[in-house]
Length: 346
Image 1: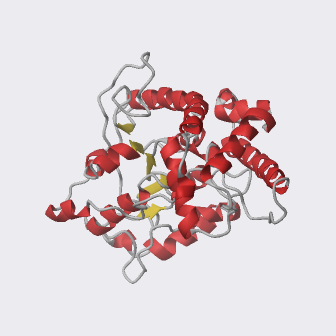
Image 2 (image 1 turned 30 degrees about the vertical axis):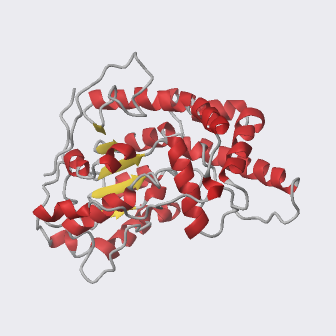
């Protein structure tokens, strides 16, 4: 069992900590806590959570590095303990339309900032779907959200059960490609997502005439966490993972997870960031579809639990520990509980 590696100050104008996802998992609150405690970008730069530098991966590592230079150029020479260069862009977790099909953002980041610590906050998938839909409904344009959440989830369930190419689905959902030396989860993700876009758009055209070419969100596939976490871990040794619900219950656990000393004023951080207080009626889910969603997430969640258990034994920081009373640990009696392991800050 290897020793846990600490969070290191970056040697150049690149992030020391990357909050890479997942969206609606508490990334805004985590970033706000850290940004109040540390200087996270150069003075004079507008404090910006989502730097988005990895959106430039199709242009190569140099383009990414130049992007970071504008945010962290002055921090390189500032050795104060109150400096912590941070990029908190949750879309890094699973890719989006900005990424090329065959490019792995973690590999590019590993070239630019090999010692970076990667933080993931993972929310129970059904809860995340409701929150993500509600977020897009009230604050994001460019997506086709004319149906209720239940209607959109129903479309995706039909796609997964009837229309999705089964070989492709198995390669992604069951991660069967990890046994291959050329395993590229981004490729399978893109192919599945584009196939779902096509199927869902045709389905909607059969119901109404005003369907446009807006993007259709994949709520279920994007909440199957293992393939994305696996891909990041292949490139980084310093990875910390926390269940969002565990973080929401007590946000001070972030300091414990990262082993970052906090000031006396840190208690003031306990307030919601970018979180809806209520859900619209269109976000409600019936008991029937919630049951079906739990069934469809059973395989990917079990795969995630087993993988997190392996990461724990390798010294990665996983809060709460696999085997404890949490959504990512429950329901698999074959997994032994392990004591939570921590990442320390050097």
